Length: 355
Ligand code: ATP
Ligand code: LTN
Image 1 (tube, protein in one colour):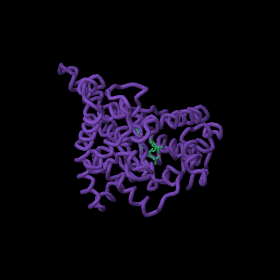
Image 2 (cartoon, rainbow, N blue to C red):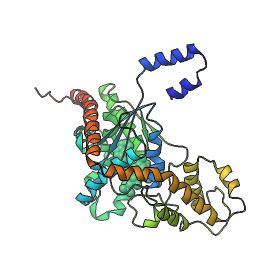
Image 3 (spheres, protein in one colour):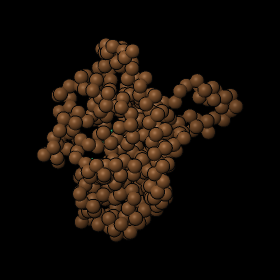
Image 4 (cartoon, helix red, strand yellow):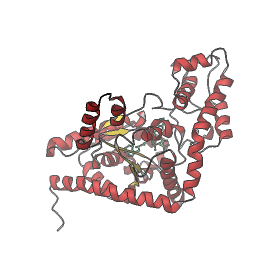
């Protein structure tokens, strides 16, 4: 934001005034995370990670690989370990600079679990029962409706509140969890005086909910068992094009954004995110052309945009030592910030100090 303001400043006086403000006003803080529960999809990319890369110059950003959230659903330990490093590698491959952003692994910073325990005592059973993600996931994993799945949003609130984050960039599916985080923060602040920054969700205009290619009424999700339903950030070009060719549309032939055309509208949103074109421009571009041409164009735009991410990812995965260094330095910085909040909370609730 401040850099854009600087570019727009026309006089020397304006520029000096912005520089003075930059010197005194701390940058706003951002926190977000992705679960290492599988290969990331273009939903995760367009709804979250791609936007993160646009924020790194103007905000102080922390991005976490939330492996503690991941075990609310049963995970194979080796697969979880692999996915944890892969998720961190995707953050870097997408363009997040470790010099500018703090990237770390949730289980490396014990304050997350510690604050979550405290916040559990300030979150109501009724509030958690209303969470739609809990309802969806407990229906999907009916044999394992564990307490962690139920209190998942409390750990998420702890993630965010530990860092006094102002903004949380996420897809729309996480909005309800951010609202709960705000309620818990406000409740705690009201009892103990100002302790937590009350965060706001930060969502992109388009791409906030990318739908499944096989059922456009359902969110695209990395744990979907139907491989044709999801496009993975790391899929190769042929696979991406094949998946878009098979995408469910409708019996019409017109490329038009409309609620009654969820399949085509979803493809238009994806195309818009990758090309920067708006819906009017897309409708004009494909006037008189069929779905075949359109699907191919979406596939190509997606594959071409992701190609550099994929090649950088392969390089990064071959350098485990580098990934470990990024995670270690990230955890050190995150722990320092997290401890400050946790000590304050412990003092306020009346825990005696460890001497
Ligand atoms: P899972 O299948 O394990 O539930 P997921 O694909 O839903 O995972 P998360 O790890 O829960 O992904 O989400 C990571 C981030 O990606 C969140 O900010 C979430 O809002 C965003 N996100 C996930 N799916 C989509 C989607 N289809 N469209 C837009 N954003 C999404
Ligand atoms: N619940 C989120 C992942 C997540 C998160 C967070 C996102 C865990 N902690 C803190 C933003 C901020 C999801 O995407 N399912």
